[in-house]
Image (cartoon, rainbow, N blue to C red):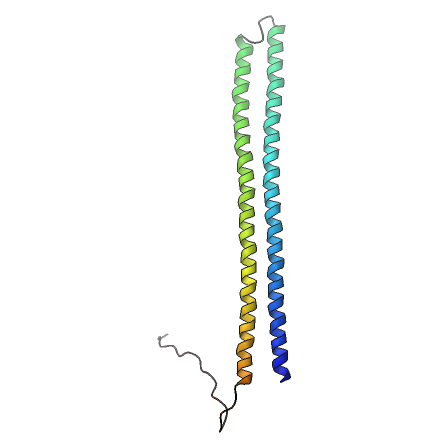
Length: 168
């Protein structure tokens, strides 16, 4: 009767809510994935900007070394002025390589995080569908028990649980 209809309606609403919740969670994961990707890109760009700043600083420092060399009457591209410039280039080159590696790693890390969030989104959808099916299956089982006719002479025996044969 009406109890069965109410039970089915409740199960359908519960299943619908499970699917809606799964979709909402998936959407949240997709947004987090895009945020992680954007952060990786931004961090990569920032590392490249720092590398460009190192190059600009190297130009300024080496220009000053050249000017000091010429001002001292030695020459800007020979002797100790050249040694200072070469040392600066080696140091700056190491910094630039480190920043270039960091830029690539940060970008890759953002891409990896986005992929993880995409997988989480798919799992949220799958899980919500499973929850909905479980809810509907449970309702169907209950409906079957409501609809079980009584045998002549009394009610049908209720099912029993599985008897374990293992000693505990």
